[in-house]
Length: 476
Image (cartoon, rainbow, N blue to C red):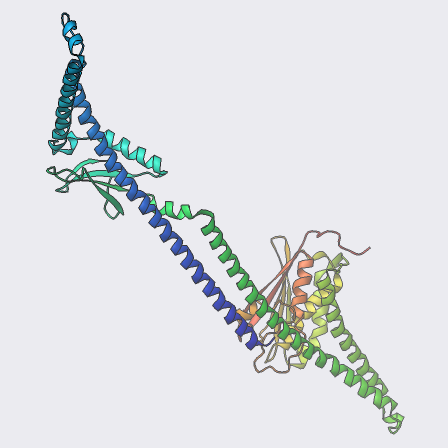
């Protein structure tokens, strides 16, 4: 997949994700608005129910007072005859019943008139019409019947904005309040208003959306994470593809050069047109041997990496003298360094240098570090190898005066096939496996690797290997 196509796919997926987020946000916003509207309608209806119940309670009080006042008169309306009247009632009982009915209707009209008069002559002071505890009881009952289970604060405000009653924590500054007029049908009384607000209204609205909103947000986050991982994997695969392509190109060149040299030497040996005395057999044999060794070394690197990838590497552990190994590796590279007018300095200061390790892989580890120190240097190489003991580890430090590594590349130099751009140093060849191999061998020995470098100032690689035994990983 080309880089351009990856970017097109990424942009399309990004636009789809952005559209999905917008739709989800719009849906959640509308759901909240609908929930808010339903809540407001429920509260407004409950507020009118509260005002109605307060009026009904006042009417009940007025009627009750009139009933208690007229109770003796109602007894006189029963028509029970007294002593000595039996003969008259017996003479005209129909007339007596009519009189009693007329008296009852007259008393009823008086009763209704008194009730109406009581309603028209109510006290203008709200405190005389309903007590605070009665008001709170009515509010709580209506809310319970409506299914409103939220803490609330209330106040009764007079027409001149004076507060008659209020709850303990009432403070409506900046709050969304609901208001209804009490005793709205009064003709002469001053207006009084009941004001209520809910401190936890916003949180209640969000909670009321419940599972749907939570699942929607969770699903959106999951899709976003999946999108990010998809884009990351696409670009990573593209980068790995480029790295592997570069690796194949480098491997072809690295393998082709010794093969061509061996082929040329073989042709010289088999060319009958060249006299035997002119054929430097010893020199040609040496060239063939060196190139075969070089070819074998390159193949071995690739095979070792394959073994690491499959997890089949087994260390052949044994007690090794690290100072002897280091001295031997330095001796092998000393000729290359002298040919470039450089020098290798060693400071073997570690007091404890006997380790349980795989001698072959440790030797290759050091060889890779010294090989890089020589290859990535555009001047006379100056290499310093030091050893020391630090917190239970044997420390090998390899410093050079090479081209250095910038901070961005320092995070990736231990990746397989990754090669640091070398600027004007075009002659540097390799597979990008050396430092990856160094890291893997150090970790297989339960150690680790650090790098310190400044661009154009050189680099220092530090390999920490544990002094204690690392366990029995040796092959049987």
